[in-house]
Length: 101
Image 1 (cartoon, helix red, strand yellow):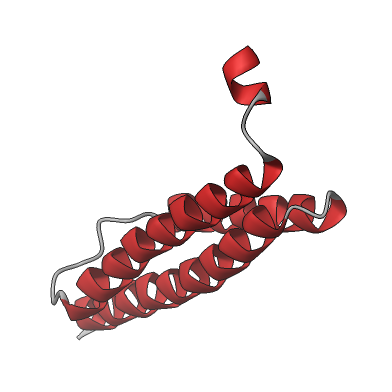
Image 2: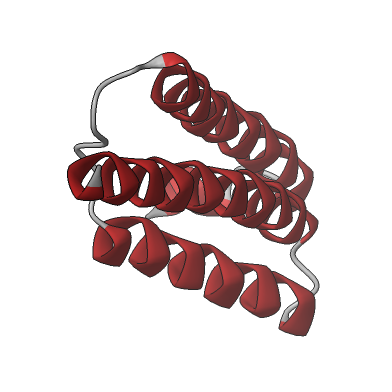
């Protein structure tokens, strides 16, 4: 662990923010693909909701321990994941309406 101890906290904050933002881009791509797809969502509500709670937890953790990279990236992730949840719910609702017709 001497290698890690030699790296500055600023390095970890900066790289953590870059990695966190990169993960958010991936979630954003998923939201876009899910929104554009006319097919039934393959994502379960449990999966999408579970990740939302995980992002909220880590956002609160970041606030508690004043870890800016964790706070910022997980606040953004929770927001984007909320959008994904809305898209999945709407698609499931539309699918159920189509079945009734």
